[in-house]
Amino acid sequence: MRDAAQIILPSGQAAAVNLLILNKIELSSKLKTALPRIKALVHGQGFEASALSLALISNESGETSEIWVGAPAADADPFALGSLASKLPLGHYRFQGPIREAHLVTLGWCLELYKYDPFRKVDARAVTLECPGKVDLAAVIEAANASFWVRDMINTPANLFGPDELEAEAQKLAKKFKAAIKVVRGKVLAKEFPLIHVVGAASARAPRLIDFSWGKTNAPKVTLVGKGVCYDTGGLDIKPSSGMILMKKDMGGAANVLGLAKLIMKAKLPIRLRVLIPAVENSIAGEAFRSSDVFRTRKGLTVEIGNTDAEGRLILCEALALADEESPDLLIDMATLTGAARVALGPDLPPFYTDDAAVATGLAKHANAENDPLWQLPLWKPYYSMIETPIADLNNAGAGGFAGSITAALFLKRFVEKAKAYVHFDIYGWVPNPKAGRPKGGEAQGMRALFALIRECYGK
Image (cartoon, rainbow, N blue to C red; front, side):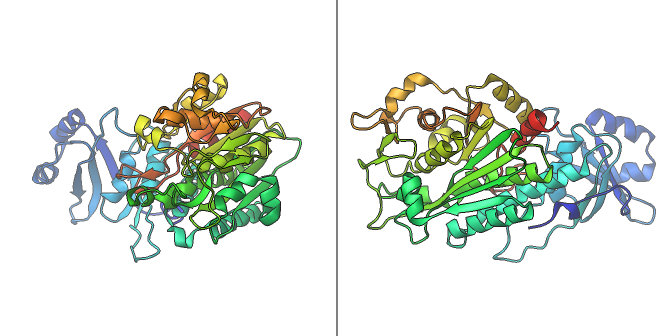
């Protein structure tokens, strides 16, 4: 993983080529007073200040001293200027003059340069940026590095990243920040968190619940729960091959809460943080659970299995029940949970669910400010009827195929009663088509917006 501190450098650390952002009107004005040599250079390159187009301006010695850049559209992605990192010649650059949303441009520059390359050699692009004035360099580096880590975990093939490896990442993070960590496995797991055991029982890689805590016990309690399904075959209701091809990313919720936890602990926010990750592999063997099986959960509610491919909510409900027992001030779960969320909002816009109006408003604000898109969907209680069953308290798969993301959220909400505020995120954790600052592959979603919200609420 490349360190963002090698991409964004402090002011004055090295000689930099200026990047001058120009729209068409500004270009016309500048050319009126430009030297004939400069005009010839600009016209020779066909530069007309179209969005993110480039004109290399050389000095009399033939060295590039400045690059003119076509201004992105006013409504362009805030990471758009950052995407220059993959377009510019190798070198060190600075923006000439102020730029809009400089923090996001700088972060986008870092995120644009991410590569996942442990299986083939890909040289890192030596394209560095002098941190623009008034941008918090340390904050950009921490956010970028957390995203790099999340992406690495999601991108790693499942044969190299199972429950053992997910636990190892949590152990390293806990050790770094001196957090107390315990891992529940085996007979204790089966007794105390039966559905985590049930979902993972068919795999040769043992299921477990990872549980670590950090911060003063009398501080506000913020608990993060992440879905850690390290690979999902769909169980006995087996997925088609097209549905399995990306299932290495089914631990994306766990990766995101670990990235968020890292940001929180690095910033030393005055909270009592708890992280719970049920880590399993949903496989097929003689021990696999079946459709129509009924299990009693930690909370005492009984669940009928309507579909073994709706396993994420089964492991999450046990962790949520444990988290809820201590009445946290804020309880968050993140999960790559439903295809229905992608049908509704696509891969780039994860829905979140909460009954807390203040939390919803804060998330919307910070999602916009951090260029970390989110959209609230309703916990529509009449849809509880879709997950009713005559032989148990709940069915894990909604009837009729409608509102799949909402019914999944409602299922999880049944296991949360005491938390002062609860938010569920149904993320995709993946970029199918590259965009500015977002290469194809694993992605952190909601992490930066949540960190900004938690910092605002509890950081004083």
